[in-house]
Amino acid sequence: MESRGGGSEVESLRSAFLPEQISSQVMAAFNSPEKKAVYLAKKALLEEHPNETQAIETIFGIIPALRNSESLKTLDAKKDGWDKVKQTLKNVTEYNFLLTDLVHSNIENREFLSGLWKTMSELAGGVNQEKQFDQLKRGILSQVAAWRVLEENGSNPKLSHPSEDAFDSIDLWTEKGEAVQVKGAPIHGVALIETETVAFPGVTFEGKSGGNKYHLNSHLFSEAQRFKAKMSRYDELHHENTKGLFLVVPYEDIDFTTGEPNRRAVDEVKKSLPS
Image (cartoon, rainbow, N blue to C red; front, side, top):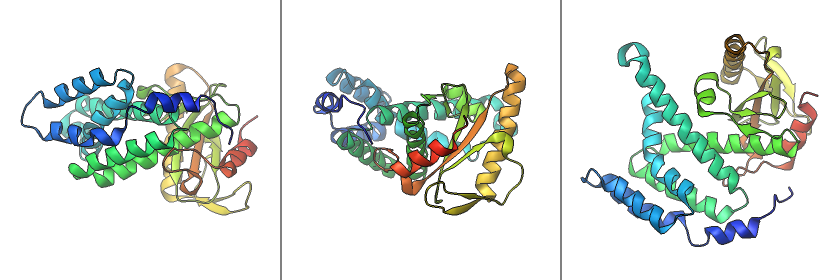
């Protein structure tokens, strides 16, 4: 896949900042009994690396983000209050936006991203959130891969607002105003489905290049149905007629350090994109 340019410039900007070098500082701050330890540690690193605000905010944000994601599994709107559920979900999607943008912006800098994932993995392990971290990483890299696939096919996508992600399940917007929900899955062949065509489970799809067949049923079908329902509600609230796209990217087609999709995924989406 062609370079987007500026790779050497990005690497030179990153040369003085290696995420893995601050892992112990971050963990020590979170483990400190001092109330201001996290704030002071982050402040010191931001002053030391003023060009790395997004990366430092992302690294310090991983532990609260994982805890918020874990709490969403048990929060109940009736028992805990909708406001608490809403705020927790908002916090999760805002962090995901930050991390997705950081990875996408540095997709050509494998060294930096390798260090970033290693650092966040160590921090997650330190608070017994390894499983939650693995789920987060898969989700973020699937979204980055979808972003790149659509970029390569001229759709000029952009990230949705975190509130649209949280409450409408919209991950990306194309230049044409199509709303895209992204899923990564252990399937063969990309699935790109217009939501109005989601009618019943067990439909067999074929991978556009390799001829691989798979079924959009069970969990993925339920997700597609939910997105279809949310798009209907979105249109009612905004008085629009928005085309929804449900895009499933196979894990096997994603580079799990950078999020870069392989050529097969790009070509399959090109054949499936609405005209």
